[in-house]
Image 1 (cartoon, rainbow, N blue to C red):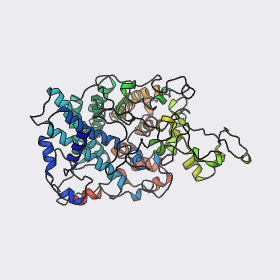
Image 2 (image 1 turned 120 degrees about the horizontal axis):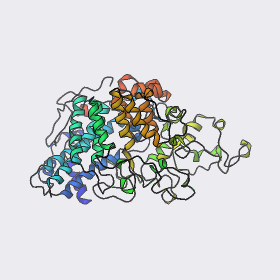
Image 3 (image 1 turned 60 degrees about the horizontal axis):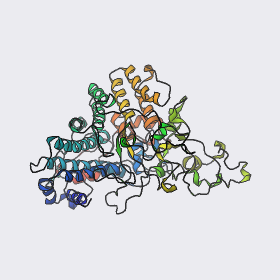
Image 4 (image 1 turned 180 degrees about the vertical axis):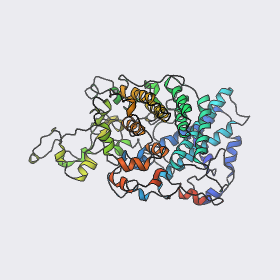
Length: 559
C-alpha cells in the first residue's frame, strides 16, 4: 500500500482539469506528473496500485460527507427523497442550486479525478518498457481504465450536458478547455465503454473489480442517450443472455442471514440481497454486476476494502453512512416510551433523508403480493417502548397508531418507513450504526432489464418492454404489467420500487430531461414549489469556469 500512496501523491501533483487544488497550484507546472507517465510504471503490480485509486473514488460516492451530501446522486430533492429537517435547504429549495453549490460541484470534480487517473494509466500503458506478460494483459489493464473514464464521462454528460473532454494526461498548465456538446461527450464515453466491454474479463476473483457486464450495462444506457436503440438492446442483451457471464435474478434465499435464527427465519430472498456480506458474486449473489467495496476485511490492493478517507480528511469514517442518513429514528421518540438510546435491532437512523410520499405510498397502490413492499423489506409498523406512560392509553409493544403522531417531527423524523436495504437488525458486535458495514451496488441486473425495456419502448415495442419489466416483477411476486400500460412514467415507477436508494436517480432524471417534471409532480412540497425547467441540467462549478482563464466556459442556462 506504500507504493499506492506514492503513486497517488505523484499523480495528484499534476494539473488536470478543474481539480480541487488552489488556483496557484492549478496554474503551476509540476514535472512529477510527466515523470510518472513516462517512466513510473513498468509492472502490472504498479498499474494495479494506480487502478486502486479509481476504486477509491467509487467509495467516495457513498462515504464522502456526513448529512445529506451523499444522497445527492441518489435523487435528493427530486421525486424520491428530500431533507426532512429544514425546508429552506438546497434541493428542498432549488432556487439555491447555482454554480457555487457544493454537492453537484463535488460530484463534477470527482469525475475528473477518475478521468485524471485513467488518462495517466492509459498513457503509461503505451510505454514499450512495461513488462506485460501478454497483449491480453495489457489490453485488460487499459480496458479497466477506459471503463472508469467512460463511466465518468457518462456521469458528466447525464448531469451537466456537454463538458470538456480530456483524453490524455495534462503535463503542462492548460487554462483554455472548451466544452464539447452533450452528444460528443456521450460518444466519447461510448468509445471507452466499447473498448472496455471487448477486453475486460468475464469474471474476476477479486470482489468489486469491474467485469465486461458492467461495461455493457453502461454502454446500453449511453446508446439510449444517443438514440441508438438497437445498440442499447444488443448491449443489455449480452448481459442478460449470458454472453457477458452467468447472471440471474436471485429467487431463493442465500447468504449470511439465511439461517434458522429468530431474526432470520421469516425473511426472504429480496432481503438477502441487502444483508451484510451478500452483495458480491463470490458470496453467491448472481445479480450484482458492479459493487463498491466496504466490508471490514480488506479485499486487496486493487479494490481496497474498508472505508477510505475523502481528500483533505485525515480520519476516514469508520463505516458507510447510509443507515444514519436514510433511516428514521423511532428509538429517540421519548413520548412513545423509547429511551433515546439506539439498539442493535432498532438501528440508529438520524433522519437526514426521508422518502417522498410518492416512494412510500403512491408507487405501492394495489401492490398486492409484491414482496418488495412487505414488512420485512419496508418496515412500516413501529411499537411503543417499555416506558410508555399509562396516561397515553397504550402499553409497551402496542402498535403505534397514526393518531399518536401529532407533530411534524413525529412523521418527518421519528416515524416513517424504513427500507431494509439501508440498515440492519443485526449489527457487527451489536453496535448501531457503526456496525452496519456492507458493500453497495452501482449496477444490479434488474436495472439492465429496465434499460432494455426503455430501449424497446423508444422503438415502440411495448410488448417486449413489458416482458422485461415483468421478469423483475415476477421475481418480486408482483402482478405483471400489461403492454398497454408501459410508458416512461411506469418504467421510472418500477425503477423506484426496485432500485430506490441504489440507482443514481439524479442522473437518470437529468439524462431524460425530467428533473423538473418529476419533481413538480411527485417531489416534496418545498422542492416541487421551487424547481425550475433549467434544473434539468446541473450547473458547471464556478471554480471550473473561473480557473479556465484562456477560454470562456458558458454555464448551463439559468445558472
